[in-house]
Length: 429
Image 1 (cartoon, rainbow, N blue to C red):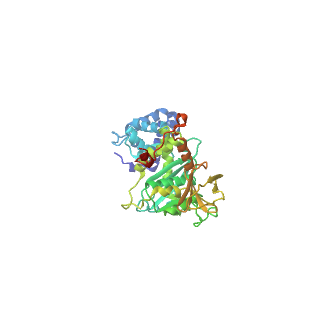
Image 2 (image 1 turned 120 degrees about the vertical axis):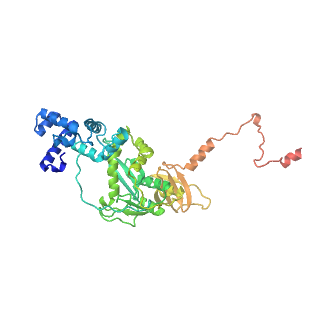
């Protein structure tokens, strides 16, 4: 049996070319007569080559005198099945994703290298060229020490619609804590994600982000951030004690950038395979199914045992993770915000609030709360209507009316807290 190393470089290149052309024909990228024309052979000779390839595999392209097939040879029918599955059903999956689907859903246990070679040989996927060598930054040893947040704008439904996917992941384990598709990454959508992570996991140590306008104020485009002037997100994170770290290049955000490459190579295909076409259904799929599946595949163990998360009472998070505006109360005890006029009700501890500086909190659901120091002065709907007054009016309108009696007579009412006859009633007896 002749060793593969004994063949010349020209013979190796010839065999590789023959295999690539055969795989392209098997994948129906070209016809068999076109394959014969590319190889410069007759149709009859190509049939002989194909028959040897079916019987003996790749090694038969070198030596025609092999008397028995390789024990590791993949059957020709299985090669055709793999190529057909990729061409007809999984055409937009990357190689790793497709390799997992073969094992999990089709019980085809082939090596990743073999699948990659066949798909690239059939030109169903392109060969990737190596990039510049970079040194990977070591991970943080504990979960909760550093979180990454970033958004990726992509055609997640593989149509003309573009959405932002906001992802929050842990540097120590690559665990995804939050993933949500939104119309556009903004202060409100970023705050919603951070608030949810703190509510479920606790307060973390630091947040790594790009220099987007909702994270940082950058006086000069492309320059350094202004660490003294805080955005709404920066103010909220400072209140809970989280340090913010800016990234000055995509390479600096390498971990999250690679993570988004994985998301873009898998999520659109999963949405297509599950028949999901709406934003609401996609976010439900993410929460209920896909985040757990993604973490099960890509999460890694932390270098050390323990956690850096610190639990925090959630009662103040609604005020902290809200858009805050400082306003001076008008003489009629109203404040103006977002083209609305909010009426402050009378308080017991001050005759009027006119001239006082209050804080208006616009919550993530669009409602408003006004605070003066530790005091809450009112809660309002997105339209500026006092929710307390609205609830009071609803209660009063739902009360049972007092019954009336003929001839103007009414049944005398006994005092609510009295359990004994009144003095006048006793004297009458």
